Image 1 (cartoon, rainbow, N blue to C red):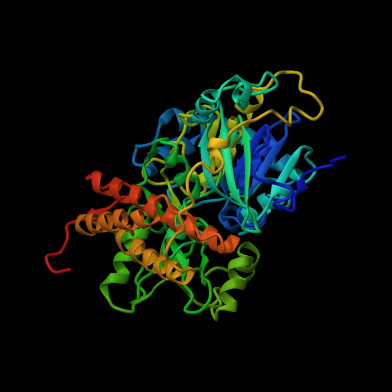
Image 2 (cartoon, rainbow, N blue to C red):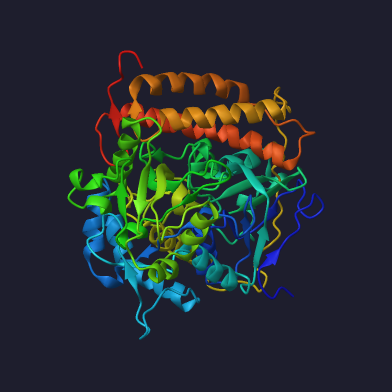
Length: 559
């Protein structure tokens, strides 16, 4: 008997070509995906799919904290102001109204937010906020929240986890049902089954690449996309390399609206290592008094914005970028060395250790930083319950456009957005099922979907994997240059043409059968890169107004 979440060893024998039914399928296992699974209160059969392992996600890397409405009502206005009033006021109101309840769940589930000696919750301040209203777990908030959720999830019955499994295709159930119906009554489709507990016109089928390189297929009336953002498309990013916009590409393939993709936020302060990986330097450092200085030691943000170093992220990122352009090989640094040494070590232990490992002691000297791609405000368009225009398909977390963030996300709003709308999606999914559900739910349904299995000829991609890797490296460099902090119409137009030409090489192609699972995943990630970057480029060309994270300038005559 299953006593909790079940980790499955995905093999062709365990998950073959015949689709298996689940009540809910969640693609992605960051905070949004896990919170969705935990918020489904009934005993349903849930499948969670992640292309990495459970402990590798952007959520784990979130340092600063999670904003909390517990501390006052300024969050509503601060969010609208930071977002350039492009936000949906109703959605922001939902965030503020329901945020406290969901944070209380995190506390109940054991997330150890920092407290003072009397047990009161401690709060810090970050850019764009009117006061201190951000809960934190030192400088490892994301990791601590993930640990708490994972602990809770491991005890939840009915959940199956597939790690290192890549979801590369999502088929709309309505198309699937129409195809099945055309085959006659004797080949009854899943949508017509009298045993199906979900809405017969909801959901769809997910095709995955298993770690072995083989294909697995699953179907459900409820599919939740929680795949994270697009930072991995860039050379410099605070995200894991695997954040390649996969969920957004899946949504676009179904014709779901993808919106606000011109609004990509760059975190102002990222330590870019000369060798090895860099790391994010949380905005909370400036919230505790750190100062940004240019190569001459001048605190330049005071002249750029009334809030100085705590201005909204788009303002700070452009300020740093422009300072770096003034003098070749110059540096911008963030300096908190004036604070007491013990305070720095206790409040920011992770940053202290990482910087020291790379030769910088932040208790005694400033740390060089540069902006890096961090968070996409756009994504898959959803309604008030995180459902897309296709019934039964939801999107939560960074891959979704909940219209909370407008043109520029307010610091530490992302985690709150993730749990509030994950909770709403879970509630809607739960309510769709009958009040009385059998012990094991309905797991096996007669299904005929041959036309969705291998109904097209297999046309192999012509490049070698080495050629694909070289192309990917060049593509990341171009994305950084063209879709960076400051954009130019000419470069955008040229990049759009390049993307369209490149996509022709990938369209209607499959990765060679002899490739490994990881190599096949690389193929789909590069195709998704081109797809998502094309959406971002078109959106940037169409928006003339400079607002929030979107900023264009006139091209130089001789660039």
